[in-house]
Length: 179
Image (cartoon, rainbow, N blue to C red; front, side, top):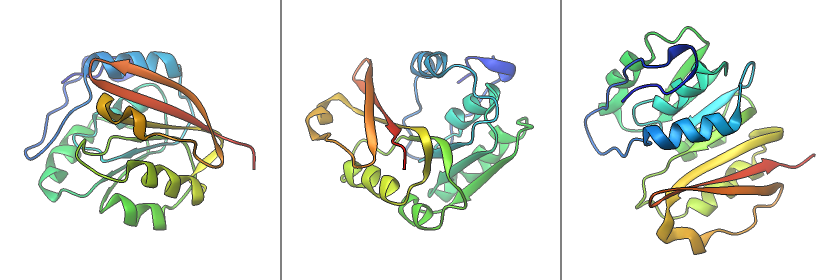
């Protein structure tokens, strides 16, 4: 995999061993082009896998970037992938639900790419909203399979912005309301 834009464009990112479904280059490129420059925006990557999405954010100016991944098999690869990233970064090796309870700050952007077979994705989004982990006006993006389209509903405290389709994958975007 390669970084698709920003100052780290064309840098290689390794795919770790274990179960992983990396975000397609086309999807990442399109999503980040839509988001525009991220200078000074904090970015949280949940279910990080390879760390590629967080690195894309850093490449476009996001700082700090925080990554959360539970699978310890992926740790060495994520750390290797992050080695060229100069921005403030931190990898949390823990369950996402646990991280949500102890998150050290609010974020400008949160990207979640839970395993497609994970149940309770809507509940995960609601928990993030209830904990107010997004800054006012911040964006929450969740990647999921198109078969789950009917499962989505309104999230209290967030406004639905749009849904972007990439093959069989969908990224749904919400904006945190004013508090």
